[in-house]
Image 1 (spheres, one colour):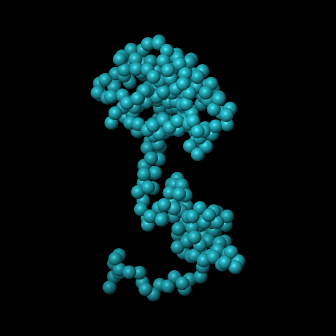
Image 2: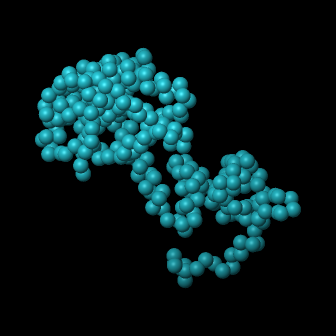
Image 3: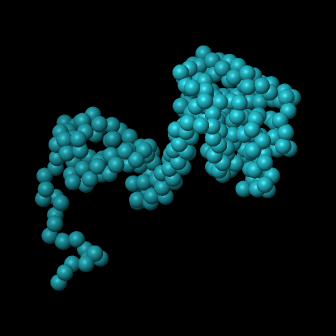
Length: 280
């Protein structure tokens, strides 16, 4: 009779009949070093099938080898040791891992859109509704209305953060502008308050770092030199009115490609993202 999927394993298979692997053999089978296997153990990811209490020698079985290969796969997918441990401890519930992958996918999609904009050779704009994640930042308030005001303020604060030895995150800095004129279909020269936000690494963040909250936003990617920004603001305001959207905060201007990226970057290849939080 043919065996079906719901039948038990062959009872004649006795795992104890098989010899254990030394750490050298296990490491070779998984293309790892001995120290790498020990680090997996220290992080709570792996427990050898047997450890000789007298010599300290570790021995591994087939299940250990299979687990190591699964761990390597999860590491390649970008999961942290804590997430991998949680997966095994939960009996294989993958909800947490799926949430992590979906966040990574969303970030990757934003990066693809950014690179698509960078590849353009003419001024352009791209509008969409996006989810913006929370970002931990060092924040400082300034006042002004001109592009030069924003440039000098961001340069000044960026320098101060680096000078203090703050661990900066590999993310673009941005500004939060307390202005609403563009929502009324006009651009004024009246100075307004704005905040320069420099992303920092959460684990090494200073005590006064501020979490800029996640939001649903109307996003406008603007490709080209800064002479296009007033036009972009007006277009964004027009779209807010036409779509019947309700702003849920001040506009954020993210410097995706800007002078700080590299002095050799052609200004006509700058890329800015205007992000207006809106009510869901």
